[in-house]
Image (cartoon, rainbow, N blue to C red; front, side, top):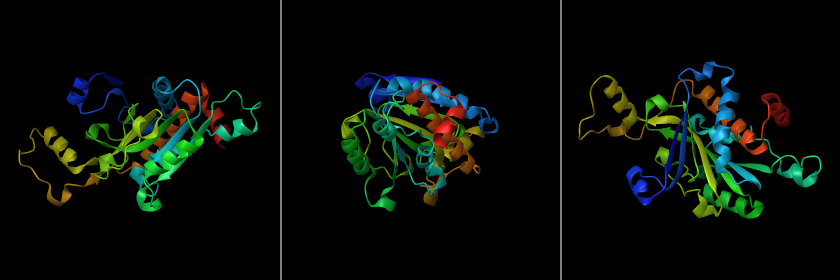
Length: 258
C-alpha cells in the first residue's frame, strides 16, 4: 500500500496533482485465482475509504464509463454491487435506522446520452443533496505491471475520460460543492507506455525523438479483461458497502443484493 499526501503548492508542482490524499493498494500478479481475495481486498479498501468520507449523511456512488466497452465498464458494473438504502430509510425508518443512506447512479457517457456526465451528476446532487460523492471509474495505467492489479483512491475528484485521450469536465468539490472521492482500477495501458516498458525489460530505451505513428493513441488491455473488470467492480462495490454500512459478511451483502 502506498499513501501520498500533497499538502502544499510546492507539492502540487512537483507531482503535477492537486492537494489531497492519494492511496494505492497493489495486489499480487495472480490475485484473480484466489477465491478469497474479493472480500479481503474489499475490507482493505474500505479501511482506506472510510476516513475520506463524511461521518454522516447520504452518499451517492456514481459509476462512470461505458458498460458496453469492457475495459471501461468498471463503474457501471460496480453500481450493481452497491447496497442501496436511501429509499428504504425514507419509507421504513424504524426497520432500517441502523443503515446509512446510500444511493447510486450509472451516468453513462456523452456518446450514449448526449449529456455531459458532470451535468447529470450535478443535477442529481442538487436534487438528492448527498453529503459526498464516490466516483468509480476505469483508469489508464502508467506501468504495465500495475495493469488490473492496483486500486487507487483519492479525495481530489476525477476527470472522466482523462486517461483515454477524451477528458471531460472534472467531478470534484469545486464543481459539485461536496467532497468527491475517486476510486478506480487501471484497465488499459497506452502503446507508448507499453513500448517503453518492453524496451526497459530488454535493456534498451526509447530514442529522444520517438514516434509511434498510427499507434500513438492505441490502448491495450489484458486478454482476460472481462473477468478482471467484473471482479474489480465487485471488490469496489463491496468496499463501498463496508465503508458505509460497517462490518458485514460477504453472505450478508449477497442477501441484501439478491
